[in-house]
Amino acid sequence: MTSPDGRLDEKPRVTIRCQDNSSVGVTFCDRFGFDADSVHYAVELRAPGLTARVNEVVAWIWDSDLTTFLEELAADYRGWDGERTWQTNDRDLTVSAVFRSGGYVGLTWALQPWPQAAGGWGASVTTWLEAGEQMTSLANDIRNFLTREQP
Image (cartoon, rainbow, N blue to C red; front, side, top):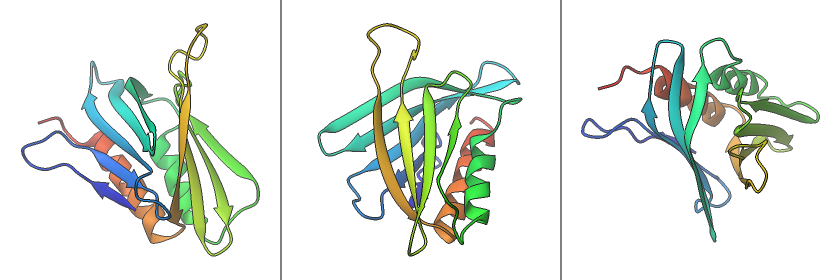
């Protein structure tokens, strides 16, 4: 389940909670931009015993868009075989999707800041959402988060 947590008095954010276990989730927050070519934001992962955050994920306007990836998954609500994957240009955020019988999509959100650096770290969580409406809602919420004007 997703929720655009932006309130009038706060910066916009989107939280994705696992349908199977609501203590597992992902939050997109603290969005800012340096210029017209990119949007910078933080991604937080949560699960029992795990909290991980990357403070500066970058979405470039010329890259393959996370929103487009999520919209394609939502459009294929009847399912697909195998795994589909999207990642940022810097490879610090990767999203992998699988389809499970019964109409559910498993999204594995993996953070790995500085993937080329020695001694780096990585963390991931998997959220399960309904293939139709919940995936469409997620795609819309992420699009609004990435494109909404800054207050």
